[in-house]
Image (cartoon, rainbow, N blue to C red; front, side, top):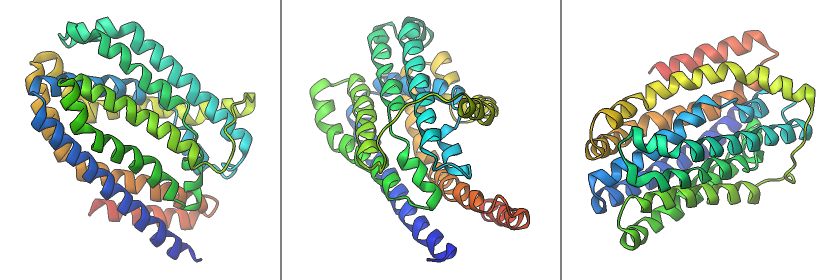
Length: 294
């Protein structure tokens, strides 16, 4: 199969997957917004803000290196990447658990301290995800990615209505987020072609750090772009106002986030294939910039 055919096939699968994922998210948000109070939606939004801050400020992009690097298929590199992911997840979980009272006080939600403590479960679960579904993207293979993203979305969308009926407040969203993280963890191991391994290698660890440290700065900037306004609203206004703002924000960002994910997933493996051919790489880069500018 030629490169163009691979791109068309992979892009089609990825596009369908992203559209389905966004539709499921849209349906779920409508259900939650209709059944919960704006204040509950606002408190739930603070969970997302908290997780996003730590995720974006600690993201070394190890999964991106597996796609971009010429030796990204090396099992040892993947095993060290798993070690980095596990360490990051445990560290994030510990930070959230320790700072839960402070975070709740910052958002003026003292009744939600317990919820922020449970939020710490999410990054820990994410840390133990298998990275094989990311690695195979280097070959423009996106079916595992679609499964890992859509299956959990479908499960929690189906669970949204009964969960709200049962719990009746923001805790319903908390448990949906935890269930989603657990389902993604399980799905990542189910679709993996390799056994899950964690190991240490000084050379690979240094390489991962050298690759990822600039992304830490980028992550903080991206948090300001995507979550900064919600952080300001959450600390300066009521939870009800944050809830209304967050629902509107999610609706507005649906298309932008879909396009961003599509571009990232398609272009990184494409650039990786031609990274040794400078003229071809420049041509592909110019073409991608022109397409994205449209």
